[in-house]
Image (cartoon, rainbow, N blue to C red; front, top):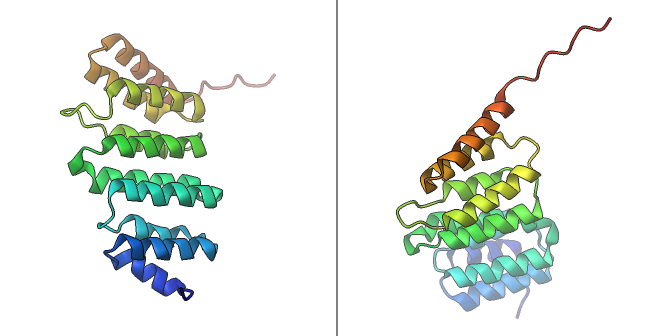
Length: 185
């Protein structure tokens, strides 16, 4: 097969309808060591790809270019949250938010985005898993107040008023200004 130009790879990622055509372009992009996340975002938004195909591409990309892990996982999560939510793929969104948090544990976005994709009518992703994930984030994030606020709301949804109040208090403590230092003598 002739070497594809970056423009041709981009075109195939954007508009190709056949999996094999997209796969060939992906393989060429990997072989050419093209590590520009913007190029692969076109691939992730190709609406002809099934969820498992997106996972295949994303996992391979993250393996080949480990410095892109966080961006790859965040994009996959957002794609699953938006385009595949009609298929109740919030679990896939949650899986990739978890992977993004593993790649950059001190980043706030994966935790908040995961909390925002909770679907209370369908109870997906499972509330207990989401709460555990956010509690993990509280220990990793330098300023956990937004996560504590989300935890308070999630515990309220779960009917656990005691834990809801606990995290509301923690969030309020984190937003208050630090105490004034005594004047030096």
